Length: 274
Image (cartoon, rainbow, N blue to C red; front, side, top):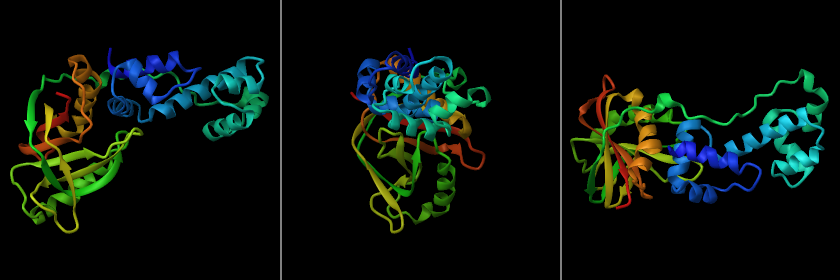
């Protein structure tokens, strides 16, 4: 079963009890970083934001379809008090629970339904080669991103490409897009750059450790790269029994990729546990 399906199932099973990233990770047999990344790639939400939205949506249904007291609805939704529940409910829906019960015939809420995996995001992915790479440094321009919001990345490349020749000690032949400093909320730092032996003023550097990688190949237009990444993280890695390591992953662009047309071959290097 793909990682996303496992996570959604466990959330729905445990929705009325305590849900933590650690407990989900253990029950889904996947590390937290991998799990959070898959979830944000698919839903554009963090796991805990989704849990909150599902609980509040179920609470809204209970308020409009039953005679339960609002306090009991709040407790069932995992809130310890009427006040805390009302604040969260109003923040999410723009209306208080009491107002919803009173005005329900005229109120339409946007409820969060259980998420279903988008099968259109699953694309054919060839088996990767495994390659150990020695430690190296990438120097370039960086931006804060999230797995749900990657719009800054194309602009970053547009800014870096004219400056690539300014990198001191650059190793020619390839450019790198490095995802590093990822956290459990799906935020990360993206560095667009080239391999280099030292620092360059006005640019930032990321040091990648000596590491074993699963090296996947994306062929076609760069706009379809998210589908390849989604398939790798959500389907291929878990089905192949490969566990991602806690290290930066990166895209490698060499002479097989045409930056003018956005077409060609891009390698996706995913660090794995040996």
